[in-house]
Image (tube, rainbow, N blue to C red):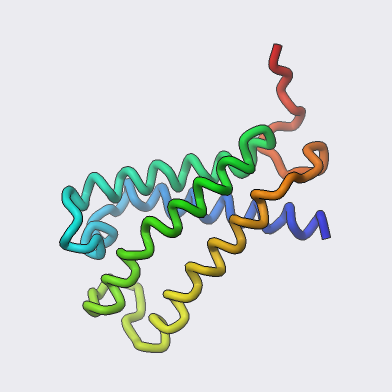
Amino acid sequence: MNKHKELLRVILAVSIVVVGVTHFAVPEPYARIVPPQLPYPMQLVYISGFFEILGGIGLLVPRVSRVAAWGLIALFIAVFPANINMAVNHIKIEHVPDSLWFQAIRLPFQAVLIAWAWWYTKPSELEKQASIFLEEPKIE
């Protein structure tokens, strides 16, 4: 089970980093789904992208991976209003389906992401944890 858990850690980390990078590379679609009640949509997109990248990298740093997982949970909850806004107001984004079926799957998938990140809030065996380090750095 540990091998699968660590493979899924890497998949989540890489996926969330890629999504975070797209917040900087192509921010406009994300800004369009920020609820209108929130100020500075473009800045919110950049902030969420930064924390996605930070959280994804953090998942692969054993000493901070549990904190990173909690941060990703908070982030997934924080961006959920944008997903609701997109679904309720049928905001069309190029290359993203706008069907009721897609939204019926997409919104509950946020709970899957939260559960997935939650899995990494539990202690793990550091020597068996997926890491961006070949060898655990020594802090003196």
